[in-house]
Image 1 (spheres, rainbow, N blue to C red):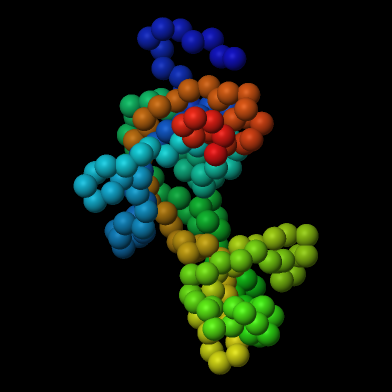
Image 2: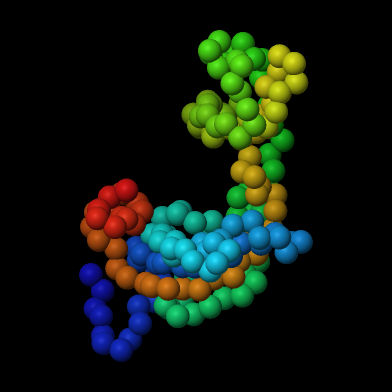
Length: 178
């Protein structure tokens, strides 16, 4: 447990729970995600620092900061964000690979877990992107893979994580583990 000196803010370091408000834009300036809705309301995003809960590039920039700080136009390259677009993860699968009862209900946006096409030890979340006849088009790439991410961030709170949060690798929601 860290020594807390009154009047001294906690810095963002390994194993601290950090709550942030953020706006994520692409390079064209389009908002791709935000912790607040259009009216400016919304819950701050809590994450456990140093545990891979947010993209590595943003986590690195937040290291050492304190509650109340605001960061503008933090640019995160694809390699430190959602990765490069991996063509190996764009697949065309025969419809017969899916259970027969699903054939008429397959729609873009539906997701499923499956093995990586060249590394059977890895599981990948695939998203259906379309269908061409008896072929289902899927991707294992994140929708923002290959893109530079531009964040505006407000650090709302920094606190020490509980033992339970450290054991689970993420912060607990209100009322306990979520």
